[in-house]
Image 1 (cartoon, rainbow, N blue to C red):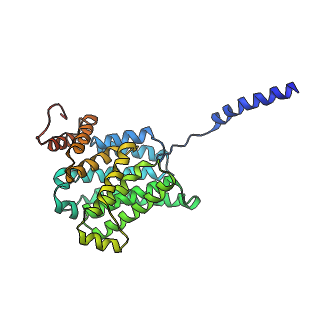
Image 2 (image 1 turned 135 degrees about the vertical axis):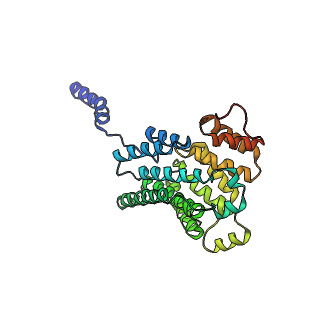
Image 3 (image 1 turned 120 degrees about the horizontal axis):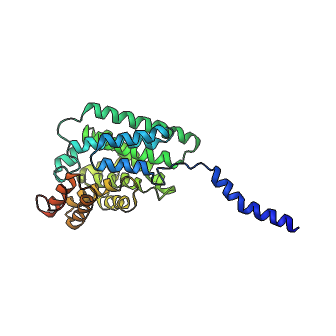
Length: 292
């Protein structure tokens, strides 16, 4: 009897070790911070776009079944075009015509082609995962971010505002479905936040017309939702800071804008755009000691 007890104790102690040794860790971008992806996004915020996409492509090549790899690649192309067009600046956000109607001119066609290819592939991979599990968190996050990026591209860069609103509605729907099940997928809050803020910024007549189409917006709620990504986002936290800071400037919330741009300037001193925006928020051309 004592011998049986000893064997049972050994099994209890040994089994967890065996399980751990044979268990293959799976990188889950939606629910954990993957260091290689995080490093790629860090390069993105430093405006080293080609290097960022190379990092994303390297990770994607080893994780071809994960839609987030293609989402990250698409983000690399979109973020570069938004930066090239000056969209992520107060000059754009505080110009009501540009903010509501998009850029002047046209985006780079080759960059947009690469962007669309990556978005399409991400959606294909996400849809494939949903065949096994319709509530798959990785799939829902990929669909949320893909639709959100499509909305930005359509409305801001291509000035196809109806298509942009449809994509925004899709992103909002995916985000709500994802966050209802996985509230810790905090990068998704930026999709609902941008949707609420942009729609809430429209004229009263436009908001009324959109309301009949099931598209609703609330600027205050939008900023609160973007702030959720600022607080706990994994990869999109700096992007959420940019959006929240620019929205704060529109809403005359100067202290919030100053704090966020200062944090970005200190975190990314080689990105002169952040130092420039901090200076503008402070009412000076460029504060001493920030940026190059």
